[in-house]
Length: 197
Length: 197
DNA sequence: TTGTTCAGGTGACAATGTCATCTGAAGTGT
DNA sequence: ACACTTCAGATGACATTGTCACCTGAACAA
Image 1: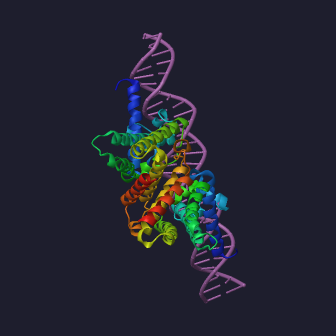
Image 2 (image 1 turned 90 degrees about the horizontal axis):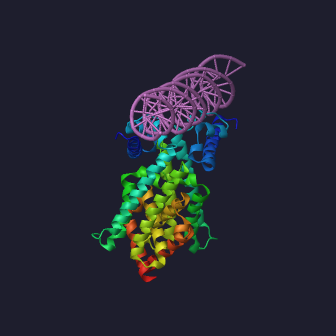
Image 3 (image 1 turned 180 degrees about the horizontal axis):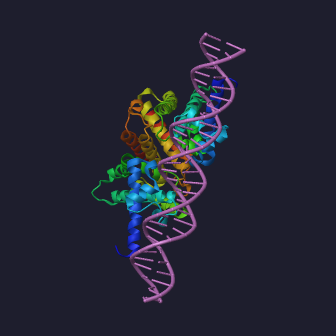
């Protein structure tokens, strides 16, 4: 902790964690640079030594979350204890779980990345990797023929289900159906389609 | 225009239009109360005579957009010139078109409504009505049995497709498929499912 | 030991949301 | 016709925020 680069790296990490924590607990409005700095043990101006501006900091938070998601999906795919038939559901669940446990972070992950071009590139790459992992999971299940088509449909649909549930637009009163039921309906439809077509 | 209530109503309308215009052209950051006031021909403080706070103004903008969407879907459903087989696609298209032509407005429509409880209620009601119109369109096509299930799946999925396209997360390079193709794949899958099951 | 680099602190500034207060004209009662 | 009330909008003010220029002290290199 005496080294300057170590100390700087620790501060950067603390800033990212502080921003993510504040986002989770208080929503986007709670994420002020002053609050982030205070929670990270530094003052207002310090974040500017590590990020060009606020948007870039938030985009970096999103990129890390997308990277964690990609890791989770990769782990599910590689885990031999998970039955192959469960892998897709598990992968989709890890996406929905982010939405439910960290709704504000979820919105950030699927927003258009903003800020510094470097930060944007990192977020796009992380999102790309997450999508690739999903693609691989789907590829393990269906023939190479329609892998992309089915994977894209699954990913976009489950995102839509999650997003509307998170924002409260998926009223249980009206639809009489849960997000889980929607996902499993979709999966079984695609499954049937993949076998027949 | 001499009457006081008429003048006030005109100002309120101008404020809503100004906020929507600014949102379209410059994104959420461009929507400041000062800019809204200026575009509506009044000054900073005037909006507070018509809306409790900024969030309520934005929520009112979202509510109006949701109402327009509901109207469009209702019109498609009622229009005898539209072949029944096209009605669902037309209804879904009207949703996707909002996303493409007014991405910032689209995000606002599907965000959690904020601000004054009255404004929130209006937005929730408008969203409810839009969903009911979609439900009716789907109900015209499939038996009453799984109407809700299919309608919910269509609505959430098409929202997810639109949202990811709008935010740039649906890379054509990676997926080799357009949003339209995804929607038509989904519709034909549901169609097949409805006939068989 | 001396000079350099750089993480972080500090003061300042413009923009913004919000409110209290003021003003003038539209509306109302007599 | 006149005085009184109401209220849309203007104005001044304030706290908060993102951002930057500048300063400081300690970790490094020479």
